[in-house]
Image (cartoon, rainbow, N blue to C red; front, side, top):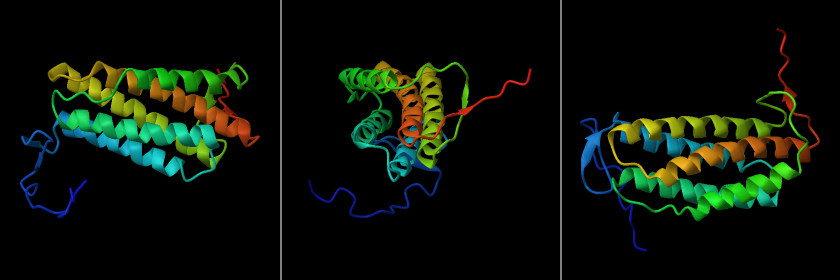
Length: 181
């Protein structure tokens, strides 16, 4: 692969537009660009999470998730382009089931927290939900891959389980919500 990014600044976005992967230009505040930004932010938060000790299974899973998110970003950047395969959803579900089987059943809602890694993971989960909502908004106006939507939905579930798994492996209890009502 040659130098794909030989020049970082182009000045073409100075007018408030940005180029999509198919060569068209769109406003930087369009739904498509907002969705790309939320997927990118999710990838960055997962990168922060991966600086914490999370264990080998979670490390491998989240590294693959980062690649998948890059693929989703490509799909959003190039209208009509499909990259992510349904098998990636199956992989998330398999990991989710494996990790969840090791956890005690939840009887209460939990608050974000416990270890720093779990707190970062909760942040990733909330950004994932926002990215999913943004893709749903975009889908109302333009074509969006249903696999990408399903993937983000399943990923937020997996991230919730990973939060709990990180705390459990660190022997730090989840922070339970105290319902005062």
